[in-house]
Amino acid sequence: MVKYKATAKWIENVRSVVDNSRSHSVVCDLPVASGGGDTGPMALELAAMALADCALTIFADVCKRSNIKLNRLEVTAEIERPTDSPKPSEASVKVRVSADARKELIEAAWRRTEANCPVLLIFKEPIPVKVELETV
Image (tube, rainbow, N blue to C red; front, side):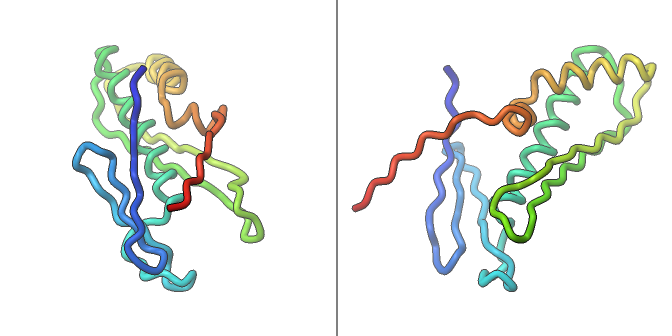
């Protein structure tokens, strides 16, 4: 079993630093209009960033393994959340690709990407989350 661990630590107000335990950190914050300092992305923005990057990374890897030469690749992910709800209502992914391959091969590579992109799979089929609250 492979485990991925991230730890978020409160800095001040609504600003935090999230670390992935591999020496990579991201500052998260809310926009000024929401009471933050706008010093970094919000968590839901990080989720959209993770979705876009995971789809791009897996697709590029599938193309490489399939001998599809990419000329250009861009993935945009959007997450929509109603203003009156904390729960996102929709996520979408747009893939723009230019490659030296037939359209059918590129589409087959994307289908393999959808079957193997962990973040995309989490969005499509949510997994249970165990929560443990410890007061100190």
